[in-house]
Image 1 (tube, rainbow, N blue to C red):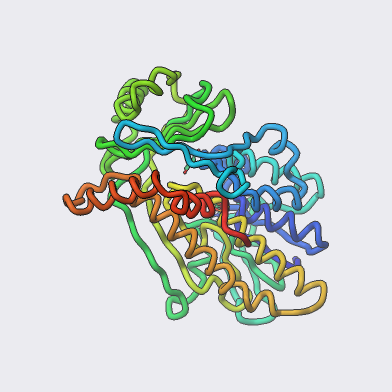
Image 2: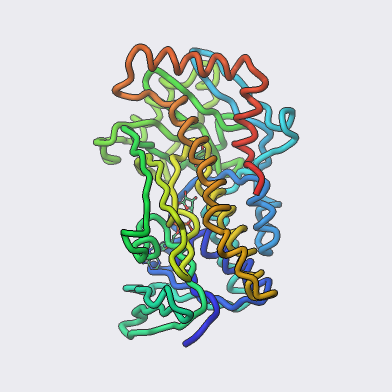
Length: 389
Ligand code: APR
Ligand code: PHB
């Protein structure tokens, strides 16, 4: 078997890349180790920058996003008994769209099926070889049979635990990491959201976030300890703790109900450089992780894919390698800025177990400054709505 680009992973990165390449006439095969239902069962964040929305339009997968997505013109930050609004629209003229990553994935899968591009689900034991040659090979097992595809390029869109990054020799790969001393306990519930916009809460008992997926489905998070187990959190306990972290006025609007999903996720900042080895290119979570405060994960995957798709299309349309050679530097410049923003939001909004009196004073000063300064709110907004590609 032969194709032009083998894409490993059918998460948002791989699917979006496949769609943008297909539109330009570049042939791809996607290899995904899990089943389609498994991929669609993952619940993740749901805030899209305008740039990501634009790419989904380009990919021909934005119809439902435009009819069902909720346009948000700002967020609220609650601290010390008061709520402060950051008005994105007034500060930068830009907005974000609330639309779940699961729905983005589903729309991209449907778009891929509509053009008849191949995806192999349950492709097991994927291995990459000859990456430094002109004919990379990708081997995998499908229905118990050994298969091999020869290609021009491999795109490692296979997430943090994928085979892409692991195929880069240790002597070439550099990694940078921060692991945070807490996690997020998330609950999804079939009830209208507590408010029209997202509320980020810095409370003495820990961070909380009130988010949503639609006008009838809400997503809530609580900062929790890393050693806590989800079984220890009954729905009642979750709602009780969330209520304690909300100010009494807004708490009255909280509509609780049985959770339809509940999970704990650790928080991590991680970057692997240089995102390329020979003819292998990494994109999305395969190369970097951000803590979810600020909702940059999916958006960063989208900007990587914007750069990588343009570079590959340039290679096939005019034969130029310039875009591919420049991909790591261009992508990493934006990635590090999103890493900084996500780290800053995390630092500002959570309660750190080891924090000293000085650290706490610094956090309070940071928030006071943000609430009082249009310049500081503009800086937050520029990053939240997305830096330019
Ligand atoms: N072989 C084939 N597929 C693999 C392999 C492998 N060895 N390892 C992982 N995969 C698949 C996973 O099953 C998953 O479906 O690659 C896909 C990677 O998808 P994501 O983890 O969603 O990563 P990405 O597409 O880069 O999306 C980034 O996802 O985790 C969130 O916050 C993150 O929103 C961001 C987005
Ligand atoms: C979510 O809705 O899951 C969400 C929203 C905003 C964030 C993180 C997660 O910053």
